[in-house]
Image 1: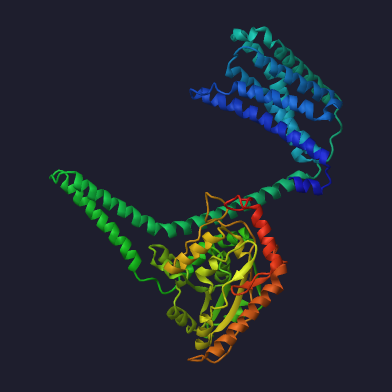
Image 2 (image 1 turned 30 degrees about the vertical axis):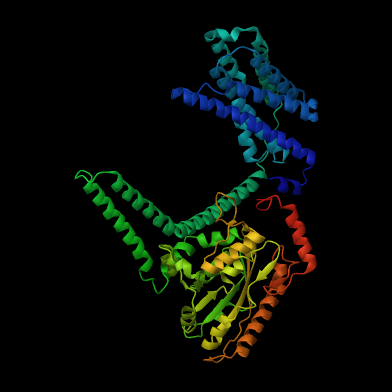
Amino acid sequence: LEPSLRRSGISAASLRTLELYLLSLLHSGAWVVFGLRNLLLQRLRAEHWQQGAMRALGLSAGFHWYILLSLNSIWRHPLVTMHHMGEAIGLSSQLCSQAIGNQAVSSFGALRGLPTFLLASLSALEHIGEPPSSMPFRTLRFAATVALVSCKAVGAPLVLRRMLALRPELHQHALLPRKLVTITDAAVSLIWLGARLASREPVEACAQSKIMPALLSSLRKSTHHLRVQAAMLATCLGLQSLYLAGPASAAALALAALSDIMRRAANDATSAVRPLHTRRTCALFGAFGALVASVVWPLPRRPAVRWLRALFVDSGVGKLLKDYHSFRLIEEVPLEELCPASGSRAVLYACFPHGIFPFGIQLLWLSMLERGRILGGLGASVLFRMPFLRHFLAAIGLSPASARNLCSRLTTPGACTFLIPGGIAEMFLNDLDREVVELSKRKGFCKHVLRTGATLVPVYIFGQTQLFYTFSGKLQELLRRASRAIRVSLIPFVGRSWLSPFVPLEQPLTCVVGKPLNSGATPIEQPSAEQVDELHASFCIELRRIFEQYKTCHIGYENKRLYFDDEALDEDEVEQIRARRRLEQFHLFPAKL
């Protein structure tokens, strides 16, 4: 609330006073919860209901002394000063006395905390400008008056009198200040209430509340934010589970088979244990067969459009995922014009950069799905060797990245396909400080576009490299070489936290779809190297153009420039990167993590 309160003109001193009101709310609310907790645990006959009395008294006395010492303006209000000073003295006398039991402390504190909680709420509302004649203020004032009379003016003295009759330990001299403070506070409450009733002003017309619209708006924003976070967390956990389900199942089966072999070796082959081993072996062979079947089972040829729309569009999950990244789609040519009908030529979206995980392409895919089109794609071949994950990827329209699959898609009329030419190598170029794409030697997709006569569209996603933290330096180079050798990404990364490394940082994403290239061209069965180089050069120029033209539309990219993998970095930019890395050289990942 602080930024909105500052915009409304509240000074820093008023904010400090408001902080003390909120602290009073926390203090009195804690006493109410403490009393209800002990009452409930006592009714349930729990063993630990008598814990925490001395801690509660000590914290409460510290709160009242803190108010008296930190708020200078309190001395201009005699009743408030007398209340806090009396409470500080009374609580200090309780701390100095002998053990008086948790029941007396909790019930007495709860009775005095409830009206204080409501009165502090009234003071906070009045301090931030809520009209006294508004409905929330009147309702809260009525509740505070009822609580003040029933709890502090009547209830607390009656409870004190009953406890004095039943508990002889309350007659010790150290508790005399506490009794005097309670009686004085009750008398002052009754006198103050009588004076307010005697000088009651005429009833005003109900004014419009100022705080309720702000609170409701804040509540709606908080609820939406929680839904967005939950949608992204569920999506990432689902992908992570699919990714790890196959290897985890294989490891579990291997361990189970090894333990079975060890048990066979340790036990004698008696008739009593042989049927058990037979059943276990059959179960292991059955699970292993199911795992192998999920790897070799044919993939679906067509994506499940109705199921995907129900899962991502109709449920609202796709919109929540877009809101998480504040996704913005900029189209120089509308997608409907690029893919007008099923009889038109295929379109290839060449997307950069890859990043650790291409969330921007996932959101572009969702945008196409909302318009009733499926944006197919090509993914790493290793992903289609994993059980369970391969079927999910095929269901959303992906296929293994190979020349055969690319040609098949580009020769399908009206097909829309995305491709990330940078691949695994570009994942190791992921850097928070600079934008580098793996493009100088990646010409194969241009050759296939010329062969099939398909339309080539450059796509750049701003913010894709800002979603995860990774290693840098010699370790990164070593992992890059190992990943290229085995064709599997071995790059370690972390996103929002160590507990959920697959969840990306909450950074905005801007996807720019450039102008089409090779549109309407005649297919060339065997394109020459010069023709491939010409289309590749045009693509590089177009990709750099959309980066320079739209980088001001994305926060944090205004002073950046796009580098290809064969270009040297600017010396000034290198020095800035080194200076930033020197500040973080003692951290495995950046300090703000």
